[in-house]
Structures are given as structure tokens and as C-alpha cells.
Length: 269
Picture 1 (cartoon, rainbow, N blue to C red):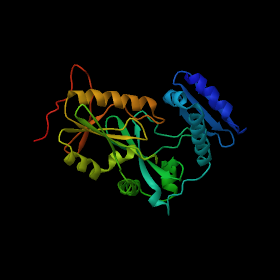
Picture 2 (cartoon, rainbow, N blue to C red):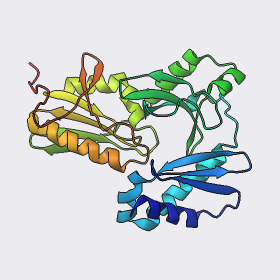
Picture 3 (cartoon, rainbow, N blue to C red):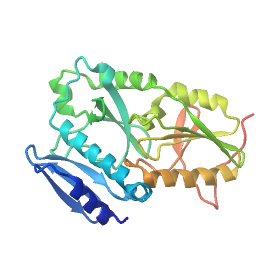
Picture 4 (cartoon, helix red, strand yellow):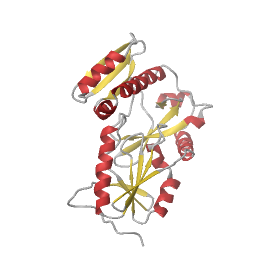
């Protein structure tokens, strides 16, 4: 389905008379605003094409639920005191807006050349990004939020599914809790994987709901990784980056994977 067709399906499924929609043809996004509070959520339509093709009814139900939850949360204040265990980091691309549509500045940390870290209050079925105004109102320091969020993400499970292609092993983390990509901030997980692999460790966060780790043994592995990450990126509800990273000496370095020029794939001694 084309984005414009997905837009029409979503608009027909929305029943709340207090919600109004606007479509940006250039960015292929649909914005839904609750006119009672003049706040809304934006849905990127292109990544939904494959989901609608596979199962239109489920895809439509999922996105309507996402919209409903998002608009409901916009009316609830962010309360940080007493909810420290529910504060988590979320990974976004560097193109992600630094403030809300109503002008509130979001708190964030730099991460890589491709990604930033924002901070969120988990509300069960969804979460709200924390803004500077809420931080000040609650009397919290930014450093405290950072520390708590990183501690909480390290406490999340990290069960991995494994697949081997042409001698290269790929590991996938998909718990569907909204923080799969956030687990890239779990240093102990990355270090343990770096010790486990016998080739080059590569890491990718193509969208919010997946973390990919790869033990790259040969040039074919880079090709497979590049294609895989791009496909995940194009299908994700919240895309982050189509570029994978190499993990070396505790640092992440984004790489372009080209047929003419690939990173060295020497195995570790």
C-alpha cells in the first residue's frame, strides 16, 4: 500500500471526534492532534507499508492503539518522584526533534554521530519523553536521570536469537518492550559479546524495537549485515539509523558498507 492509502485507512479507523489529522505529503507523515489540548502524535507511514501488506487488519489495529495510547499520555503530567525505577533511556537518530511540538525542550545526551539518547518515563504500555520543564518542576538533576536510566536499562533481560549466514553469526534482541535499541547502552552486554566473538563485533540499531549484534568473519558478513540493517530500518515503526557500528575498545564507530570498500575483517588473535 502507498502511504496515502495507509493514511486513509488510519483516518477511517480513528473514531474520536476530538482528534484532527493533517498529512505531510513530502515527509509521508500523518499527524493526529487532540484539539482539546492542542497536542498530538506523528506517525511515519512509509515504514508501515510492509506491515500492511503482510496483515492489514493487525497493522491497522496496532497503529490505532499506538495513536490512542500516545494521545492519552499527552494529557498526563510527568511525575518523576517515586517513579525512578520507570525511567529509561531511548535511542533516536540525530535528526529527531530536540523539543516537543508545543516548544518544550527534551533532555538528551550525545551518543554517536548517528544517534542521541533521550530519556523517558515508562507508563506501562507506552512512555513519555522527559522534557526540561518537567525535570525542573520535579526538582531532579539531569545527571541523576542519566544515572538512574542507565542503571535501569542494564537490569533489562537480553535474550538473543541466533542465526548463521556464510560463516557469520548474527544475534537479535527483540523483547518488544520499547527498549530493545536502548540495550546498546548496556556496556556489560557489549563487552561480554566482544569477548565471545572470534571475528569483528558489529552492532546495529536500525529501529527502536531491535538490537542486532554480529560476529563478522568475512566480507560476505558485511554485505549481509548492511542489507539486513537497511531492511529493518525501512520496516521499523520508529527508525533510527541504517548504518551499523563497529565495536572496538569500548567504542562504537559507524561504518558505510560498500561493495568496493569494506572494513578489514581480520579475526582476533
